Amino acid sequence: MIDLFLLALIAGFITVAYLFPIKANEEDLTTSPVGFLVIGHLHLLKEPIHRSLRDLSRNLRSDVFFPRLGSRRAVVVTSASAAEEFLSQENDVIFANRPLASLTEYMGYNCTIVSAALYGEHWRRLRQSEPEHYTDDIIKGLVQVMLLAGTDTTAVTLEWAMANLLNHPEVLMKLKTELNNVSVEGRLLEESDTGKCPYLTNVISETLRLYPAAPLLVPHASSADCEVAGFDIPRGTWLFVNAWAIQRDPKVWDDPEAFKPERFESETHRGKYLPSGIGRRACPGMGLAQLVLSLALGSLIQCFDWERDNDVAVDMSEGRGITMPKAVPLVAKCKKSLPILDKVVL
Ligand code: HEM
Image (tube, rainbow, N blue to C red; front, side, top):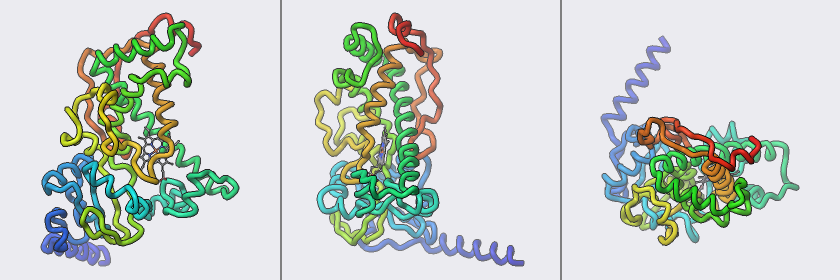
């Protein structure tokens, strides 16, 4: 009986939702797609989400738009100039909060982990690592964040970098030559060598441009009502910055879909290159990630000669997941590169 009642209630809800689409506010008319009661615009989101949000932005012809995620009001930003408006100067402080979510409440020690903490004294203490304030839960939270935010992002980027190199043998050759010239005595790349490998740095930057491990950054939330880019935005609005779309925007990048590490030699990319975010919530681990990526990628290229499997182009489509993994895991052939591998104890 109760089951039947519940079923009727749900069916009624769905009918009402579809019969009465959400009426947008005056200001939202051009900047919100058509949504429905209860679900808002959730039905428009298809995997990969960053692609469907970029397409929605194109259809609406607006680089700032306001989808509703169920009952939650959100704003999605798809241009470098709008991202800068939201995350610089006084707006950066307003959008320095993170959304409160059940996930981080239950899994993130009641939202005290640094990536989920509300902007304020607690967050500042964590970012300036004032250990005298740490409780056991805070220490466990820090370890959790380092594992969650630090491992998968770096591993996924390494896989995309290798995939790009295999699809661009001329880039792979140029990188190998740079690495051989840096360690002429045939030893493995060391931390102090990475500063002498600009091409290696550019290969990693170009990989993070096309395949950012956090394509929508991490959601921000506004802590007060504000006006940004001509829109009135209420407190508690979730902000998604589509870094993936911004880093492929043909209005600001020359030949944006092409993998060209050389572009980082000359182009200025302030504002339009943001794989680690911008503003005060930007990634504090990027320096470490850059170093680990340089050493790992550099050693792989130094120690082995790489080839594509069956000489078929590597599939570069994006799979499901927060850190934008490859849809098809990378398979490649390698043989040891002499004489360096003989000198390395594996
Ligand atoms: C390729 C590697 C990495 C990428 C692409 C990446 C990207 C990002 C991005 C986009 C954000 C959010 C920025 C924003 O909200 O605007 C972030 C936040 C964060 N990242 Fe990373 N990250 C990487 C590696 C790491 C590593 C190695 C660590 C630490 C060991 C780390 C720790 C964090 C933390 C703690 C935050 C939260 C900062 C806060 O909310 O105050 N990340 N990262």
